[in-house]
Length: 168
Image (cartoon, rainbow, N blue to C red; front, side, top):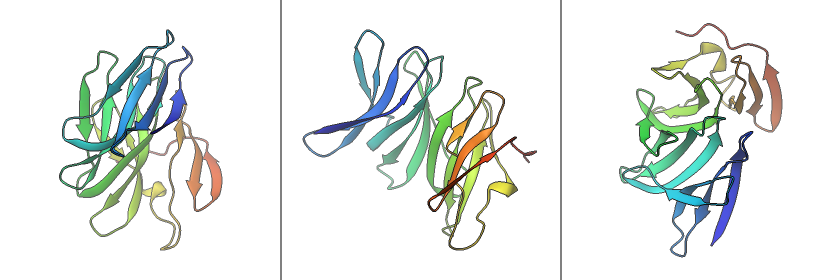
């Protein structure tokens, strides 16, 4: 058994995952008074909480019984909403900001990786976040309240994008 703390918000709440005795991975929330809540999205075989915002919303991903990685958003009341990009076989959120926007990446059926930005009501992608070549790809890692994407990672390198481009 092991655990990983992936994110902490300004209130001191921690989101992460732990591996149980059967090697299944589950998401968790640790509150400021040291109460642990273990949760999985419906249909999850494995799950991982990646980010938590000041409101206590958690963005993460899970591996489903359909053998596909899906994204999820867990509300502070425990309600879980799952999401996928159209045609994706893998959706992995990395960050959620104070405006409840989620950024991450997804893989389409052809194997190409794309960045995405999910607002509270829809999923949007950006052509500037697309693969740079067959050997590199961009992974948006953090998202500020002003929609600045920071620590964009691509094969061992990091960079900061000062503003998210117009999306379509």
